[in-house]
Length: 217
Image (cartoon, rainbow, N blue to C red; front, side, top):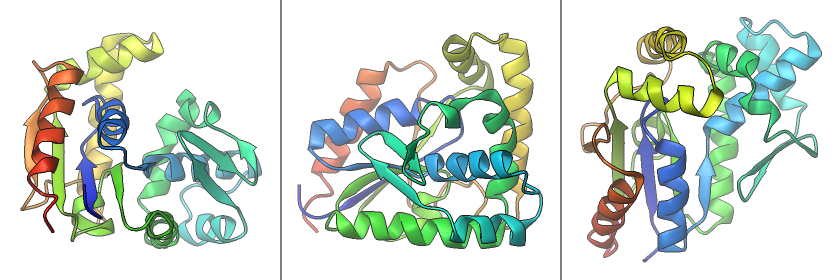
């Protein structure tokens, strides 16, 4: 595949992370999980006692903190926080941190730099990749699924009750889709794939096939 960026957006529980990693593997492309940056920033805020609702305070913290993604591992000031960023406290607060304009500006710059160091060729997942981070991506995918299926999948990963996860997803979806800065939307030129009744392999195969048709640019 020629130099290209594949943007994969969507809410939690749609299989986005697993699909993105497998697509990158199939196409032999680097994989960037932009959500890990916001989660790492949330970890930094929680550990330092920074007010997560203060955009300026969080942006200042980010400016003096090192973020690095290597493979599928996320590092915060050199510490591997790949497990810490998946803790419930982080999941419950990351949407608050991600809603700040200053925070997004700082982290989007880092994400774009990461892709630039990989020769502008990567599978990038997140919630605003096709709309804000890489609006010129050669292929834009938006993954979706029914709320019930999304909750069932996440509950299977975390061990929480499906009903509890469903409520939490509804809260996060509302925050992510109604925030004034980089809201979760379906980019106008994105291909929407409903994963409710599809296996991971089916979704990956479809995206890989679509990528083959977008590699001539």
